Amino acid sequence: MEGLLESLVSIKEMSDQVIATDFLISAKSGVQNYAVAITETTSPEVRIILRGQLKDAIATHEKIFNYMMKKGYYNAYDMVEQYKADMKTTDTTLNLTRNFT
Image (tube, rainbow, N blue to C red; front, side, top):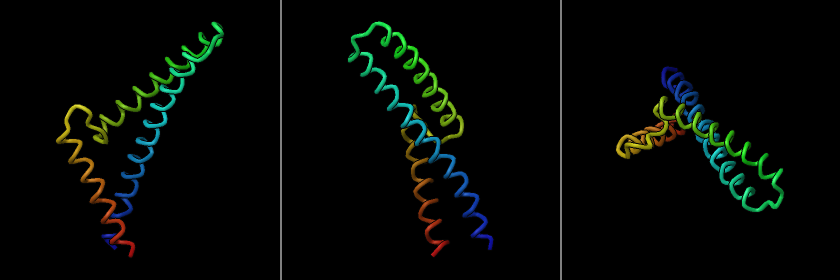
């Protein structure tokens, strides 16, 4: 029973990290798409609107990035720490599969 409870706690922590990572990737994609759209439009009015959207997308990306850094999910400035975090996620995933089989 103790292994199952530990697994459930790990699942919640891992789920938070997976959701944040997916959100970060989506925000990054949004930034890229707005930048491309700005270069493709010929309308000055649309370009102004897209610049505002781009600014918001960059701000959202920054908030998610800061959240992930604070939680230890993402260590952009320390590759050794990022490797440790990635290995912890890998170990948690492997342990989850062992506890449910």
